[in-house]
Image (cartoon, rainbow, N blue to C red; front, side, top):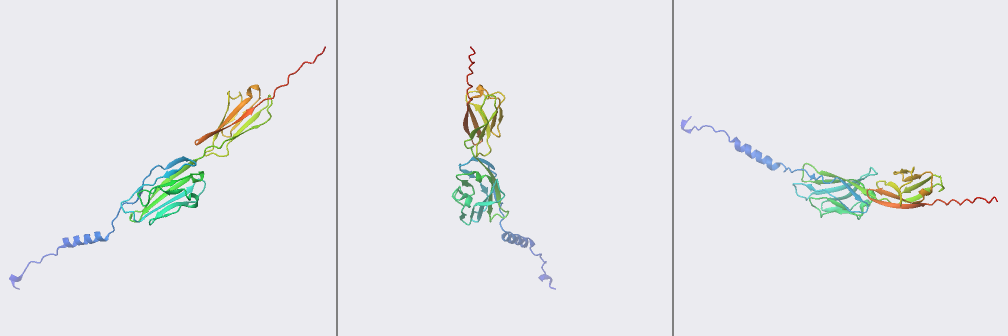
Length: 254
């Protein structure tokens, strides 16, 4: 072998090969972004029947909103069934369900970083749990959910005042007071228009009854019942009139 033609054997440059491999893997892997996160917001909301209400559902995402999907569902307080309220997907808004037709919509033009909705002309049947489901296809870690619980109060309807028993001196009578509607159920109170309740009277605030015992002239007069809950108050009145005793005339014995 010609010594002059000999050259030392060099190792292959593995560092460049490894770098190329890493770059190829990085290009091949999908770009991972954070999952959709729905802000907690106010979870328990209380309104009075007839009012409008906004159910907030703000969220964050690091991906574009081109593939945003939003759905609101509702489970009534008095039932186990789940109703789809309204949804958004592929630039289209699905109309509200029959229960909310003409009363529900998104607060802002979609798509936005807010899936909040409004409900107009609320009724007691709107009370229950609402779920805001947000999914952005570009978010590889999945969607987010927000829960809102809505309570709808109803003021007491004007109560009916009635009297049970014979209004006679020494007798017992019961005054009753009842509102046909009210959420939550109202409590009742009785009081005299110009005086305190007679001694020995018994009041049941839950049932709305007032027992007047051993009637006397001092028990006569007007009584007012108040039906009260968190949404309002309503009254009714009733009057007790005791018959006058006939004057007794001593016979003439002469």
